[in-house]
Length: 208
Image 1: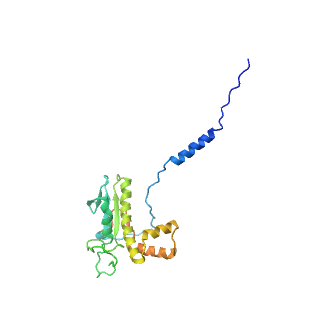
Image 2: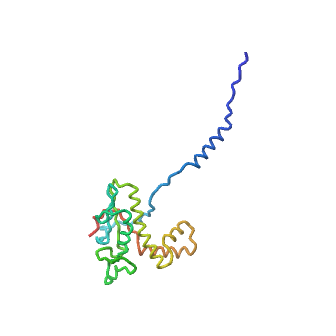
Image 3: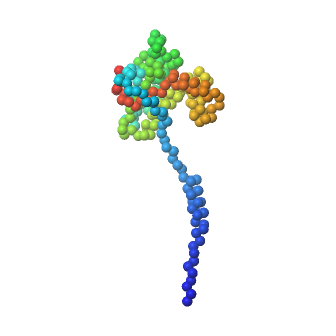
């Protein structure tokens, strides 16, 4: 009796099926983007014997505890109020006209003598508990940076007629139309009016 030949399985279409499945996976899968904060590290500087002394009124202390509660100057505060509180602090202009070195002629705040003398000397220190959630950490940082951007936009509008953040973004994306070198000089001038001074050092050190 003759043996029957074993039928072969046609696998020619398997590669096509695998390719279609791969395309389906790439099209339908949502890839989450990493969240983070864009920060430029300060340049390496030679060590100094003693850190500069910061007046207590030029220091805004922001603390986030393990329950994600926000304390600003030891007072409970809602996250939605942090931006305005930061703007008020930076824009205070507490130095008097008699103190020409510290007087801020572009500040529009209440000029409270017990708050920041000027934006150049104002420092914001953020202290987080080890159990603070990353989401809250990011939210606090965003509100603080948004306060700086608000004031920078206000001054760039007053001096140059455009928003600091719009021009900065256009230059970084390579879509700026105009004299980029001149725009960079103006951006630097705005940064000098409201320098970003965020610290995560212990607020109890270096203050008086």
